[in-house]
Length: 416
Image (cartoon, rainbow, N blue to C red; front, side):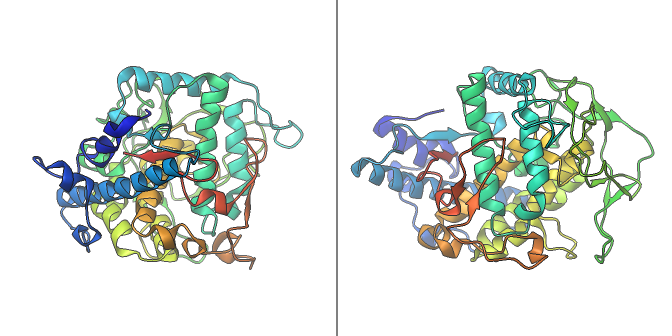
């Protein structure tokens, strides 16, 4: 979706984001003072959803100001060419089908990763999984977590467009919506031809997944309503070729296939789990994440879940809501096409948070952490000069400085 003309400015700041109850005059919609923003997340999910919508509207207002300024300065990203990312349910059925067809096209293309390096990478889709596996311990609980996944998701979008003729943009998963409606009734996961496929076959008698161990207290999450192979929707016949590396099972154990890089074809499994969505990625959790955290260290730690706290954050909440294999495997999780909608949601959340204090949150003060998982082993601090390299998935390498804004540098997109 692209917007052009002065009408687009009005739409972006008002009617597209349904944040405020009607009627509202245009002046109110196009000029929300920061003092009008919520200062604490509501425990009522419906109220928290309204808070998120107001925060989104403010973020769009700030982004629009930047786009207008870019136009005045003859910058490359303006209101006339900015891409607009939308929630899956907001796409028309033909738009959903176009995205699905592009992903299936990607899965049918030959991998670019050399076989001696990753023998199991058979398709272009696998190139992205391989890159994520190889870099997992340097892109989670690190200073590059947010920037790396922003670039990874954007380059995936660009590859779908450039290699498979996709005309749209990366959709995102709104966890607050599915927490309210349930996963299996959402247009994203209802198993129809215009969904991202549905649940896996039901496996009775499943136990719980244990996210504890290795010095952390036990944290048991209940199994979902599936567990087996996905049998409906566009991805019912897809092959997961890589991994697992660290896959949590519903008997409390974890399995792996070595480093996960050998060829290990199997069906896509899902275990859709409303509990995880509603416990960790509901509207209140999302509103609290954006409102309560004033610095990036606390923001990204709460997003990922502070180890041992019992809260896996909205990031973990989304992954464990999809469940299954590879959804529960931190390393191999991009092997489920739903990963990219989930990380669209992660990026959108960061984007909204950044717009609340652009000067600080898009500068070096908007980076915190080192180059290794929870700084183990100890490594250098991440800076604006830290290089992000996606290996054989996509290029070119860029610096963190290029990823702090979605409307400067190589990218040009916003969210509604």
